[in-house]
Length: 348
Image 1 (cartoon, rainbow, N blue to C red):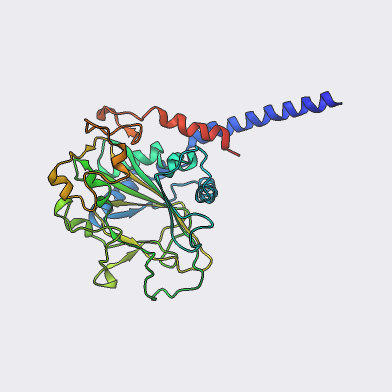
Image 2 (tube, rainbow, N blue to C red):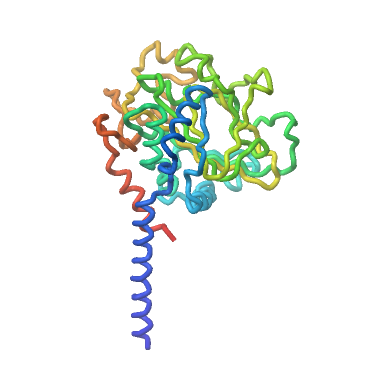
C-alpha cells in the first residue's frame, strides 16, 4: 500500500513537471507581450503621433491579462523584499512596515530582481516595436521602473492642491539620454498600465508638443525635483490608459503625474526606458560634466556599470533586446535563458 502511494506521488510529480513544461513552452512561444497585435497602419499612426505631440497610446492591449495579474502578484512580493533572483534592485523606494502606506512606491531595474518583470521589459517584440516607432535598427534596455500608487487614505478633490509626493514635471532625457552618444533620438519610454489609469488615480500627464522646445544641452533643465508648473491648465493632457495598454513617449516630452486621489483604486505601471542599441557612453570631460547637473559624467546608477577605459556599453548590464540584420547586432544570448529559468519553474 505504501509502495503504491509512493508510486502515485512520483507519477503525479512527473505529470506536474510535464504540465509546467508545456505551459513554459507555450509561454515562451507567445510571450507576455502582444506587441505584434498592432497593424502596420496602427504602428504608423503611433509613430506620427510621437513625432507631432510627443506621445502615443497603443490602440489595443499589448499585455495579456494573465501577465498583468502575475505582475501585480510580483509587485506585492518585490516591495516586501522578496526577490526571486536573490539580487537587490538598483533602487528600492518604499519598505513595508517602515514607509507610509499611501505614498508612491518605486523600484528601479526590477528586472534584475524578478524574472516576471524581466519577461516584459526585456521582451523581443516590445523592443522591435520601439525600434520601428523611433526608426532604430536595434534596441537595448536602459532601465525599468516598477511604479505603484496605492489608494489615498482619505478622499481628495481633483482640484485640491497637489501633494508634495507627486512626480514633478520632467523630461526623461535628463537622466537617461544625456549619458549616451549620439544624443538625438537615443531613448524612448514605454509606460505600461496594470490598472485602468486616469486623472483620478494619477495617470501620466503631458504637455503636447513640448518635445520640440529644445534638445540636449540647449534644452531648459527639468527633473523630478523641478518646481516648474504648466502656465495654463489647458496645456496639460491627461491620457486615459486602460489596463494592458501602453504609452510610448519621446525622450524630450515634458510630463508628470498627479497623486492617486481614489480611496479604492490602485495605479500600478511597469515602465521600460529603451535605448537605441548603437549608443555608447558620453565621454567624461569638463564640458560634459557641467552639462549634466546634478551628476558628473554619469548618474550614480548608470555610472557603476561603466567600464574603465572604454565607451562601449556593456551587454551584461544593458543587453541588446532586438537587432535587425543590417544593424550587425543580435539579441544578447543570456536574456532568453534568464527569462526561461523563471518560466519553467514558476508558471502555475
